[in-house]
Image 1 (cartoon, one colour):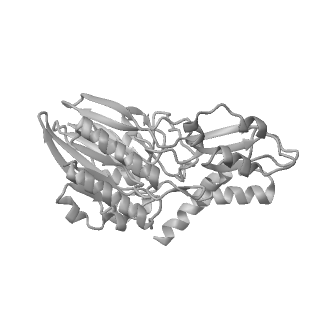
Image 2 (cartoon, helix red, strand yellow):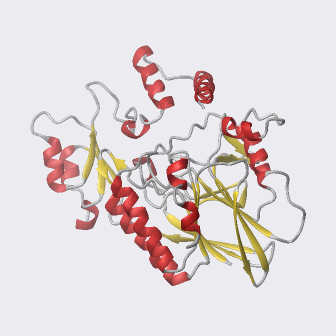
Image 3 (cartoon, one colour):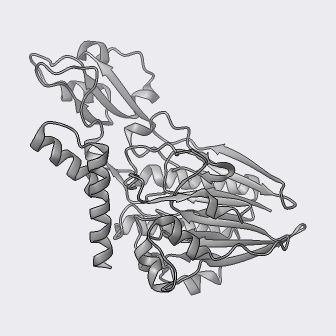
Length: 381
Protein backbone atom coordinates (compact mmCIF):
# COMPACT_ATOMS: atom_id res chain seq x y z
CA UNK A 1 0.00 0.00 0.00
CA UNK A 2 0.98 3.62 -0.39
CA UNK A 3 0.31 6.40 2.09
CA UNK A 4 1.21 10.04 2.62
CA UNK A 5 2.62 11.24 5.94
CA UNK A 6 2.52 14.86 7.10
CA UNK A 7 2.26 16.66 10.45
CA UNK A 8 2.31 19.99 12.27
CA UNK A 9 -0.15 21.84 10.06
CA UNK A 10 -0.61 24.46 12.80
CA UNK A 11 -3.75 25.79 11.13
CA UNK A 12 -4.50 29.31 12.32
CA UNK A 13 -0.88 30.15 13.06
CA UNK A 14 0.42 33.70 12.89
CA UNK A 15 4.04 34.76 12.42
CA UNK A 16 4.62 38.11 14.10
CA UNK A 17 0.84 38.67 13.98
CA UNK A 18 0.67 37.89 10.27
CA UNK A 19 -1.92 35.20 9.52
CA UNK A 20 -0.62 32.21 7.56
CA UNK A 21 -4.08 30.99 6.50
CA UNK A 22 -3.54 31.94 2.85
CA UNK A 23 -0.28 29.98 2.77
CA UNK A 24 -1.89 27.06 4.59
CA UNK A 25 -4.79 26.88 2.14
CA UNK A 26 -2.28 26.91 -0.72
CA UNK A 27 -0.13 24.12 0.74
CA UNK A 28 -3.15 21.93 1.55
CA UNK A 29 -4.16 22.37 -2.08
CA UNK A 30 -0.72 21.08 -3.08
CA UNK A 31 -1.21 18.00 -0.91
CA UNK A 32 -4.54 17.33 -2.62
CA UNK A 33 -2.90 17.75 -6.03
CA UNK A 34 -0.14 15.31 -5.08
CA UNK A 35 -2.79 12.86 -3.87
CA UNK A 36 -4.49 13.06 -7.26
CA UNK A 37 -1.14 12.44 -8.96
CA UNK A 38 0.21 9.62 -6.79
CA UNK A 39 -3.07 8.01 -5.62
CA UNK A 40 -2.17 7.10 -2.00
CA UNK A 41 -4.37 4.71 -0.07
CA UNK A 42 -4.39 6.96 3.01
CA UNK A 43 -3.18 10.28 4.40
CA UNK A 44 -1.61 10.33 7.89
CA UNK A 45 -1.48 13.61 9.84
CA UNK A 46 0.68 13.22 12.96
CA UNK A 47 -0.66 15.90 15.28
CA UNK A 48 -0.66 19.67 15.82
CA UNK A 49 -3.52 20.02 13.40
CA UNK A 50 -4.22 23.44 14.88
CA UNK A 51 -1.81 25.97 16.35
CA UNK A 52 -3.87 26.50 19.49
CA UNK A 53 -6.29 24.43 21.59
CA UNK A 54 -9.01 26.97 20.74
CA UNK A 55 -8.40 27.63 17.03
CA UNK A 56 -9.95 30.58 15.20
CA UNK A 57 -13.09 29.91 13.17
CA UNK A 58 -11.20 30.43 9.90
CA UNK A 59 -8.79 27.61 10.77
CA UNK A 60 -11.65 25.24 11.61
CA UNK A 61 -13.31 26.12 8.30
CA UNK A 62 -10.06 25.46 6.42
CA UNK A 63 -9.72 22.00 7.97
CA UNK A 64 -13.37 21.30 7.14
CA UNK A 65 -12.76 22.24 3.50
CA UNK A 66 -9.66 20.06 3.35
CA UNK A 67 -11.23 16.97 4.92
CA UNK A 68 -14.30 17.37 2.70
CA UNK A 69 -12.05 17.43 -0.38
CA UNK A 70 -10.29 14.28 0.88
CA UNK A 71 -13.65 12.55 1.28
CA UNK A 72 -14.70 13.58 -2.22
CA UNK A 73 -11.43 12.11 -3.51
CA UNK A 74 -12.11 8.92 -1.49
CA UNK A 75 -8.84 9.42 0.40
CA UNK A 76 -8.95 8.04 3.96
CA UNK A 77 -7.45 10.42 6.54
CA UNK A 78 -5.97 9.30 9.87
CA UNK A 79 -5.14 12.14 12.29
CA UNK A 80 -4.17 12.48 15.93
CA UNK A 81 -3.95 15.28 18.47
CA UNK A 82 -0.60 16.91 19.11
CA UNK A 83 0.46 18.98 22.10
CA UNK A 84 -1.02 22.12 20.48
CA UNK A 85 -4.44 20.55 19.93
CA UNK A 86 -7.44 20.20 22.19
CA UNK A 87 -8.05 16.41 22.33
CA UNK A 88 -11.78 16.86 22.94
CA UNK A 89 -12.28 19.30 20.09
CA UNK A 90 -10.32 17.15 17.67
CA UNK A 91 -12.32 14.04 18.62
CA UNK A 92 -15.70 15.73 18.19
CA UNK A 93 -17.79 14.01 15.53
CA UNK A 94 -15.21 11.26 15.14
CA UNK A 95 -17.72 8.40 14.99
CA UNK A 96 -19.65 10.16 12.26
CA UNK A 97 -16.50 11.06 10.31
CA UNK A 98 -15.29 7.46 10.55
CA UNK A 99 -18.16 6.49 8.29
CA UNK A 100 -16.40 8.52 5.57
CA UNK A 101 -12.99 7.11 6.54
CA UNK A 102 -11.80 10.21 8.37
CA UNK A 103 -10.39 8.84 11.65
CA UNK A 104 -9.56 11.50 14.28
CA UNK A 105 -8.06 10.26 17.57
CA UNK A 106 -7.70 13.12 20.01
CA UNK A 107 -8.27 11.56 23.43
CA UNK A 108 -6.04 8.84 24.83
CA UNK A 109 -8.34 6.16 26.26
CA UNK A 110 -5.79 3.62 27.46
CA UNK A 111 -4.80 2.22 24.08
CA UNK A 112 -4.17 3.57 20.58
CA UNK A 113 -6.93 3.87 18.04
CA UNK A 114 -6.78 1.30 15.27
CA UNK A 115 -7.51 1.26 11.54
CA UNK A 116 -6.92 -1.77 9.34
CA UNK A 117 -6.18 -2.06 5.66
CA UNK A 118 -5.51 -5.00 3.38
CA UNK A 119 -3.55 -5.10 0.13
CA UNK A 120 -2.00 -7.78 -2.09
CA UNK A 121 0.62 -8.54 0.59
CA UNK A 122 -1.84 -9.01 3.45
CA UNK A 123 -3.06 -6.89 6.38
CA UNK A 124 -1.69 -3.52 7.47
CA UNK A 125 -2.56 -2.25 10.93
CA UNK A 126 -2.40 1.47 11.75
CA UNK A 127 -2.20 2.43 15.42
CA UNK A 128 -3.10 6.04 16.26
CA UNK A 129 -1.57 7.37 19.47
CA UNK A 130 -2.26 11.02 20.34
CA UNK A 131 0.23 13.07 22.34
CA UNK A 132 0.54 11.68 25.88
CA UNK A 133 2.35 12.55 29.10
CA UNK A 134 3.13 10.27 32.04
CA UNK A 135 0.27 11.86 34.03
CA UNK A 136 -2.20 11.00 31.25
CA UNK A 137 -1.07 7.37 31.11
CA UNK A 138 -0.89 6.56 34.84
CA UNK A 139 -4.67 6.28 35.49
CA UNK A 140 -4.93 3.52 32.88
CA UNK A 141 -1.98 1.51 34.24
CA UNK A 142 -2.10 1.73 38.04
CA UNK A 143 0.11 -1.34 38.47
CA UNK A 144 2.94 -0.07 36.28
CA UNK A 145 5.65 2.43 37.23
CA UNK A 146 5.30 5.37 34.84
CA UNK A 147 7.82 8.05 35.75
CA UNK A 148 8.89 9.27 32.31
CA UNK A 149 7.68 9.59 28.75
CA UNK A 150 9.34 6.36 27.58
CA UNK A 151 7.50 4.34 30.21
CA UNK A 152 4.25 6.12 29.36
CA UNK A 153 4.55 5.29 25.69
CA UNK A 154 5.62 1.70 26.36
CA UNK A 155 2.55 1.21 28.52
CA UNK A 156 0.25 2.84 25.96
CA UNK A 157 1.55 0.64 23.14
CA UNK A 158 1.42 -2.57 25.16
CA UNK A 159 3.60 -5.65 24.67
CA UNK A 160 5.02 -6.26 21.18
CA UNK A 161 2.66 -8.43 19.13
CA UNK A 162 3.57 -11.92 18.05
CA UNK A 163 5.44 -12.32 14.79
CA UNK A 164 2.28 -12.86 12.75
CA UNK A 165 3.53 -11.25 9.53
CA UNK A 166 1.18 -8.27 9.83
CA UNK A 167 2.72 -4.94 8.88
CA UNK A 168 2.19 -2.27 11.50
CA UNK A 169 2.34 1.52 11.24
CA UNK A 170 2.30 3.84 14.25
CA UNK A 171 1.06 7.42 14.12
CA UNK A 172 2.45 9.41 17.10
CA UNK A 173 3.36 12.89 18.26
CA UNK A 174 6.33 12.66 20.65
CA UNK A 175 9.99 13.59 20.97
CA UNK A 176 11.86 10.43 19.93
CA UNK A 177 15.56 9.84 20.53
CA UNK A 178 17.72 6.75 20.29
CA UNK A 179 21.07 5.28 19.37
CA UNK A 180 22.83 8.45 20.43
CA UNK A 181 20.73 10.39 17.91
CA UNK A 182 18.98 13.61 18.98
CA UNK A 183 16.73 15.13 16.30
CA UNK A 184 17.27 18.64 15.02
CA UNK A 185 14.67 21.16 16.13
CA UNK A 186 13.82 24.78 15.46
CA UNK A 187 12.68 27.80 17.48
CA UNK A 188 9.07 27.44 16.39
CA UNK A 189 8.66 24.20 18.33
CA UNK A 190 7.46 24.66 21.89
CA UNK A 191 8.35 21.09 22.81
CA UNK A 192 10.24 20.90 26.10
CA UNK A 193 13.33 18.97 25.15
CA UNK A 194 15.48 19.24 28.23
CA UNK A 195 15.56 15.46 28.49
CA UNK A 196 12.34 15.03 30.47
CA UNK A 197 10.03 14.34 27.53
CA UNK A 198 12.31 12.15 25.44
CA UNK A 199 10.99 8.77 24.30
CA UNK A 200 13.56 6.09 23.56
CA UNK A 201 13.16 4.67 20.08
CA UNK A 202 13.54 1.17 21.51
CA UNK A 203 9.81 1.11 22.36
CA UNK A 204 9.03 1.32 18.63
CA UNK A 205 10.65 -1.97 17.60
CA UNK A 206 7.35 -3.62 16.66
CA UNK A 207 6.54 -1.17 13.87
CA UNK A 208 7.39 -1.27 10.19
CA UNK A 209 6.97 2.51 9.94
CA UNK A 210 6.55 5.21 12.58
CA UNK A 211 4.85 8.37 11.32
CA UNK A 212 5.91 11.12 13.71
CA UNK A 213 4.91 14.69 14.33
CA UNK A 214 6.31 17.26 16.78
CA UNK A 215 9.46 18.52 15.03
CA UNK A 216 9.33 20.77 11.99
CA UNK A 217 12.40 19.58 10.08
CA UNK A 218 11.87 16.43 7.94
CA UNK A 219 14.19 13.77 9.35
CA UNK A 220 14.52 10.17 10.45
CA UNK A 221 15.57 9.23 13.98
CA UNK A 222 17.48 6.11 15.03
CA UNK A 223 16.36 4.28 11.86
CA UNK A 224 15.08 5.31 8.40
CA UNK A 225 11.55 4.04 9.12
CA UNK A 226 11.15 6.21 12.27
CA UNK A 227 10.45 9.53 10.62
CA UNK A 228 9.30 13.07 11.27
CA UNK A 229 7.52 14.39 8.19
CA UNK A 230 8.14 17.96 9.33
CA UNK A 231 5.73 20.86 8.96
CA UNK A 232 4.52 21.59 5.42
CA UNK A 233 5.35 25.29 5.84
CA UNK A 234 8.15 27.29 7.47
CA UNK A 235 6.84 28.75 10.72
CA UNK A 236 9.96 30.50 12.02
CA UNK A 237 13.01 32.22 10.61
CA UNK A 238 15.01 29.44 12.25
CA UNK A 239 13.49 27.19 9.57
CA UNK A 240 14.68 29.12 6.53
CA UNK A 241 17.08 26.33 5.55
CA UNK A 242 14.42 23.59 5.77
CA UNK A 243 13.34 21.83 2.58
CA UNK A 244 9.65 21.24 3.29
CA UNK A 245 8.07 18.11 1.90
CA UNK A 246 5.31 15.55 2.08
CA UNK A 247 6.54 12.02 2.89
CA UNK A 248 5.30 9.25 0.61
CA UNK A 249 5.70 5.67 1.85
CA UNK A 250 5.25 2.52 -0.24
CA UNK A 251 4.80 -0.62 1.86
CA UNK A 252 5.30 -3.87 -0.03
CA UNK A 253 5.87 -7.28 1.60
CA UNK A 254 7.00 -7.12 5.23
CA UNK A 255 10.51 -5.74 5.38
CA UNK A 256 10.24 -3.97 2.02
CA UNK A 257 9.50 -0.28 2.02
CA UNK A 258 10.36 2.84 0.04
CA UNK A 259 10.28 6.36 1.50
CA UNK A 260 10.20 9.35 -0.85
CA UNK A 261 9.91 13.05 0.09
CA UNK A 262 7.68 15.03 -2.28
CA UNK A 263 8.69 18.73 -2.31
CA UNK A 264 6.17 21.36 -1.20
CA UNK A 265 6.43 24.94 -2.46
CA UNK A 266 4.81 27.87 -0.60
CA UNK A 267 3.34 30.98 -2.19
CA UNK A 268 5.94 33.03 -0.33
CA UNK A 269 9.12 31.78 1.28
CA UNK A 270 10.75 33.03 4.49
CA UNK A 271 13.90 35.04 3.88
CA UNK A 272 16.41 36.78 6.12
CA UNK A 273 18.52 39.75 5.02
CA UNK A 274 21.40 41.26 6.96
CA UNK A 275 23.51 44.34 6.30
CA UNK A 276 23.49 48.16 6.26
CA UNK A 277 20.31 49.88 5.08
CA UNK A 278 21.66 51.29 1.75
CA UNK A 279 22.89 47.83 0.72
CA UNK A 280 19.62 46.11 1.59
CA UNK A 281 17.60 48.70 -0.33
CA UNK A 282 19.60 47.75 -3.44
CA UNK A 283 19.82 43.99 -2.84
CA UNK A 284 19.65 42.13 -6.20
CA UNK A 285 16.47 40.16 -5.56
CA UNK A 286 13.82 39.28 -8.11
CA UNK A 287 10.29 40.65 -7.79
CA UNK A 288 9.10 37.25 -6.52
CA UNK A 289 11.87 37.11 -3.91
CA UNK A 290 11.03 40.61 -2.69
CA UNK A 291 7.45 39.41 -2.07
CA UNK A 292 8.68 36.78 0.42
CA UNK A 293 8.13 37.06 4.18
CA UNK A 294 11.29 38.84 5.26
CA UNK A 295 13.22 39.52 8.41
CA UNK A 296 15.86 42.27 8.20
CA UNK A 297 18.82 42.64 10.52
CA UNK A 298 20.44 46.07 10.13
CA UNK A 299 24.11 46.00 11.03
CA UNK A 300 24.23 49.80 11.37
CA UNK A 301 21.70 51.98 13.13
CA UNK A 302 20.56 54.72 10.65
CA UNK A 303 21.16 58.24 11.90
CA UNK A 304 18.02 59.63 10.25
CA UNK A 305 14.94 58.56 8.32
CA UNK A 306 12.47 55.75 8.94
CA UNK A 307 14.21 52.48 8.03
CA UNK A 308 11.03 50.44 8.49
CA UNK A 309 9.09 52.54 5.98
CA UNK A 310 11.97 52.52 3.50
CA UNK A 311 12.36 48.76 3.76
CA UNK A 312 8.61 48.15 3.43
CA UNK A 313 8.57 50.17 0.21
CA UNK A 314 10.89 47.53 -1.26
CA UNK A 315 9.82 44.48 0.76
CA UNK A 316 6.03 44.69 1.23
CA UNK A 317 5.88 41.54 3.38
CA UNK A 318 8.57 42.60 5.84
CA UNK A 319 7.64 40.93 9.14
CA UNK A 320 10.43 41.97 11.47
CA UNK A 321 13.22 44.53 11.71
CA UNK A 322 16.10 44.08 14.15
CA UNK A 323 19.15 46.23 14.76
CA UNK A 324 21.75 46.33 17.53
CA UNK A 325 21.72 48.66 20.48
CA UNK A 326 24.60 51.18 20.70
CA UNK A 327 27.84 49.34 21.44
CA UNK A 328 26.29 45.93 20.84
CA UNK A 329 28.02 43.40 18.58
CA UNK A 330 26.33 42.73 15.25
CA UNK A 331 27.74 39.21 15.02
CA UNK A 332 25.16 37.59 17.31
CA UNK A 333 21.89 39.37 18.02
CA UNK A 334 20.05 38.16 21.15
CA UNK A 335 16.75 36.27 20.95
CA UNK A 336 16.52 35.96 17.19
CA UNK A 337 12.93 34.75 17.31
CA UNK A 338 11.79 36.14 20.62
CA UNK A 339 8.13 36.50 19.59
CA UNK A 340 8.02 32.82 18.62
CA UNK A 341 9.88 31.57 21.67
CA UNK A 342 7.82 33.48 24.24
CA UNK A 343 4.85 31.20 23.74
CA UNK A 344 6.06 28.50 26.16
CA UNK A 345 6.79 28.80 29.90
CA UNK A 346 10.41 27.64 29.67
CA UNK A 347 11.30 30.40 27.20
CA UNK A 348 9.46 32.95 29.31
CA UNK A 349 11.46 31.94 32.38
CA UNK A 350 14.78 31.92 30.46
CA UNK A 351 14.16 35.45 29.24
CA UNK A 352 13.02 36.59 32.71
CA UNK A 353 16.19 35.11 34.24
CA UNK A 354 18.36 36.87 31.67
CA UNK A 355 16.68 40.23 32.37
CA UNK A 356 17.10 39.78 36.14
CA UNK A 357 20.66 38.45 36.24
CA UNK A 358 22.24 39.48 32.94
CA UNK A 359 23.29 35.91 32.16
CA UNK A 360 21.73 32.89 30.54
CA UNK A 361 20.21 29.99 32.43
CA UNK A 362 22.57 27.02 32.76
CA UNK A 363 21.50 23.65 31.40
CA UNK A 364 21.28 22.29 34.95
CA UNK A 365 19.02 25.17 36.01
CA UNK A 366 16.87 24.77 32.92
CA UNK A 367 16.43 21.05 33.53
CA UNK A 368 15.43 21.75 37.14
CA UNK A 369 12.84 24.30 36.01
CA UNK A 370 11.45 21.85 33.44
CA UNK A 371 11.09 19.18 36.15
CA UNK A 372 9.27 21.60 38.47
CA UNK A 373 7.03 22.72 35.60
CA UNK A 374 6.16 19.11 34.72
CA UNK A 375 5.27 18.35 38.35
CA UNK A 376 3.03 21.43 38.46
CA UNK A 377 1.28 20.42 35.24
CA UNK A 378 0.67 16.91 36.55
CA UNK A 379 -0.90 18.25 39.74
CA UNK A 380 -3.38 20.20 37.60
CA UNK A 381 -4.57 17.05 35.77
